[in-house]
Amino acid sequence: MKDLETRTDVSREAIHFYLREGLLPEPERPKRNVAHYNEGHVARIKLIKRLQEERFLPLSVIRQMLERAEAAADDVGGLAGFEFALASLLNGDVPEPDQALAVVAERAGMAAADVRRLAVGGAIRLGAKAGESYLDFRDAAIVEHWGRVLEDGFGDLPGYDEGYLARYAEALQKLAEAEVGLFLDNFGEELTEEMAAIANRGIETTNEIFARMRTQALLRNITDRVEASRSQGDS
Image (cartoon, one colour):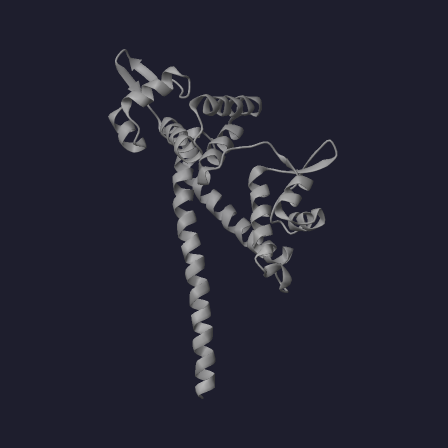
């Protein structure tokens, strides 16, 4: 329990309260006064704390969210549970219902046809329900952020179209294949909530690294071009 308190920065009393309220699964109890908590407990406690502090959600709402996600995972097996754990933790994302393409396009200030072109380029993926196209909550967020980029003035410039994001999508797909292959080579093919917690820690950290590496690469490229231009002017 002490290690659990240290790793989650949540008090023993709060953890016991989460257990009583059904927010956490019961730990393994090999003996009467011994409880074994795993990585799944760590991930779940951090998620609860995050939802309380960053989204100001009451525990009753958090419990309902967890129950719905667990029910969905039970319907289709362990992979859904793994997906829920990752989606819940990454950048504070919490799974939400799929959203209709038309609704997402309107929120992003884009035409539905332009959103479909993003899907053709591989930047997002569309699903279908009852003859309508839908996006999951992460793809919907990508579209909305792209809409802001276009509104900021890039939409009037040549080259800032679906092809721009398609290049990123292609490069990221290759990188993802390599990363997932390496992860599964090390941890095996059985997808569990404990593996999700481990993956989440790695993804959060490498996301920070990649964002800074991209910024550095862009700034250095700009600097190199300016210096090269000045050198040509001096000569």
